[in-house]
Length: 300
Ligand SMILES: C[S@@+](CC[C@H](N)C(=O)[O-])C[C@H]1O[C@@H](n2cnc3c(N)ncnc32)[C@H](O)[C@@H]1O
Image 1 (cartoon, rainbow, N blue to C red):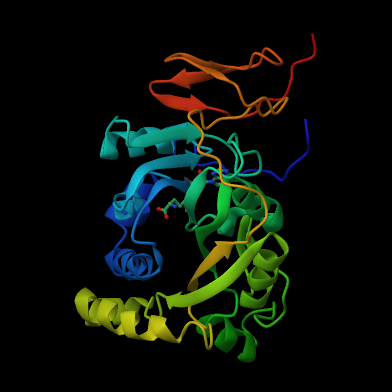
Image 2 (cartoon, rainbow, N blue to C red):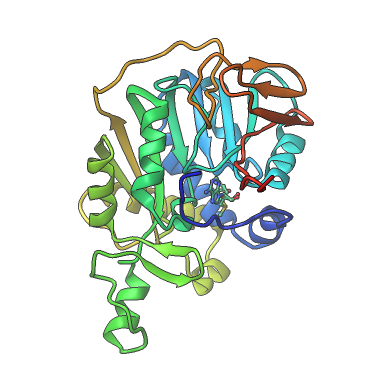
């Protein structure tokens, strides 16, 4: 099995309820909704949401016929399934972004929001997303910006050792990374994306502002400030919108999966498993969630 970076484990996490539902983050959530509305294409057939978590953003992809939610954590996907329900519209896939089980070129668009944050090898992850996208497909990538105003001030005041201006990611906690905007731009370019637009988001993510000002006012101010994103980026969060380059071809796949072990693209899908006729590997389907997580092989 190819060695890939460790995965930040959200199995059993109550992230959605503690961070979002009860965490006083409706300003951030609504500011992200504004950015997504501005960047999303008006519609399409198939959308890929990487690191979908509990599906907080998924209803925002209403213009797409089907949405494939990928997350490494089965329990996050179960929460998403509770929120969104089981239907042909949503496909739930437990998989690692470093090993995506999809046919090349089948998605019209992809999003990755608050996920690059956990990537020790960002280009490796972006390359996988690019392979799954059709040429010309849209990719909305959010990243946590190390060159944010608070980090700059803390650095100048000598209260932070790392420079917000240097290009390498800063790992401020285990498997939690902030990125420099220039570095993300370079990663996108080297992995086959053409950067079209940037929106800076969550400018007013400061406790005092959030306590004193109505959320609607902060969101409105943020929606104006977002528009400066192509000129400078000093907000804590940045939304980029890129287009997949012309390489490869679009596939209209009746079956969207490919085998992660041997690459076979004629997998047999039943309600209980996805089986590979090439190498015999079987991937379970657990309560409507396809489980493509790779396991270390156990010595026989
Ligand atoms: C901070 S949460 C964001 C969830 C959602 N995008 C949102 O904005 O509400 C990060 C998500 O990324 C997932 N994740 C982290 N590393 C991953 C990987 N290597 N492959 C797939 N998902 C991953 C986690 O399981 C978690 O659900």
